[in-house]
Image (cartoon, rainbow, N blue to C red):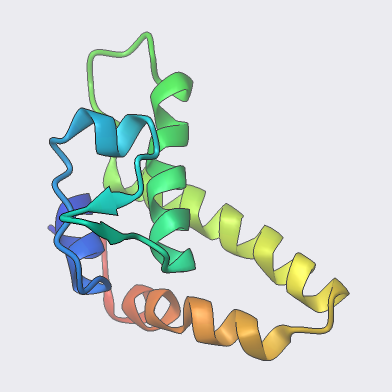
Length: 107
């Protein structure tokens, strides 16, 4: 099974250190003097960070399936937003790697 770090590295030219607490929790978007500007990467990180308060009482880490469903919720909201603003083509550019990945991945 893939990990969040592996999935993030697959879609970035910048290698992210998921053990860097400042980078992950405080949304510090700079890695090795490079700004993380890819919208999909920022959505991935936001989805992962949103699971922390949802599971704060549990000693177990959120599952990858739970993270996938959170990313899908963000994608649905982005889809609605892009339709309203008549930018469906831009939506595909941003989300195509995720859609292709999800189609080939089985949990």
